[in-house]
Length: 525
Image (cartoon, rainbow, N blue to C red; front, side, top):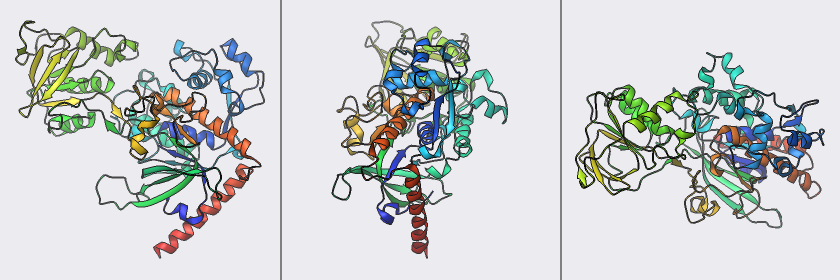
């Protein structure tokens, strides 16, 4: 969908604009398109407390129910109560390995639809299209699926069954792109777009409610979004009553902030390691690769280098026994490759020659141990990177070690790109003086509506990793909270001068689309 000059056509205000076309944006688009969850006739839920609440008003859709009341007393692996609720309804007792049938049924009710646009840089699926394609995902396959299309059934019709009940990022990306097509959501998606600013338009006599202005650039249809200037981008401007921040957090790799971090041999993404491997720069005769970080991407890098017999130094801040370390939270049977990395981290630790030696030389890698060519540095941090490819590491006790490396991979997470918001979105976080991050400083939202609490006007929402939900399994709860709040708000707006039904809004939307196409033809001619 082309967005050129939409605002200038009529000045009409869209009900919803979603920034981000990953699984968060896709799931919300599904709910806003009229797909509505109800309690199935005769269905039961294994949680008796929740079941009793559900059966009290079986004729009401989940979007009309009191989500706070339904969520009360539920426990799960998310701190968001609506996320736990929706997960419990979609996948009852899945944490216990039980395959209960969901008590929900989905009805397509187009009269409930809310006209909306989903903006994204690439194809539907967001960052999943840029992740390493052959590694297995952390989540089980059914935790990755969206409502209305079973991932396992979709994959059976494709290439193979889901190995080890998990899928690859490439398969997940393809599933999300297919989902948008299968559910007939394409007309809501504008790909190839980069949002450059989101600002509040104050209320006035013409618009007593106020709205949001979203500006950005869009590549011509069929062109891939690129960082170079060879692709001409067309500016666009939209007005929206509600804007949803669903950009994820994979945009900007986190940095250590130490001396020498910008040297050419220091990398900040798994892709740079893959590129070096494809160019033949790394093999068993190379100097070691230094991997910094103890997350899953760092583990993937360790596995990739180890597979080539390239020696690896692995430095991280936590102790290997720290319960906060992700490897200590994963079942061994489901995640054997990550269990292997944790074994390596535990069994192949660096042993300083002497506690009195404050500047020991580069440690030797054993060739006869269980994991030859690997050495871990628990509770170490990087002090500096030197131009001669030597890295200075320091333990918690203050002892320093210098290692000679071929490459250094700093894989310590990523931050969202909120450059389109004032002050990079900092005022919206739990700690307004710090940058927004998914783990330490997510955007502060109301837990039952996902409204951004510090927004400078009504109608701003956030969801997914931006609010601390890093798993697809739980970000669907944010979509439910937002769709429910918008639906309730629209019912309350009837009689206030707004269009009374979704049909009226849809008619106006179609008219505006036609006007846009006419104007575009005139401009091009």
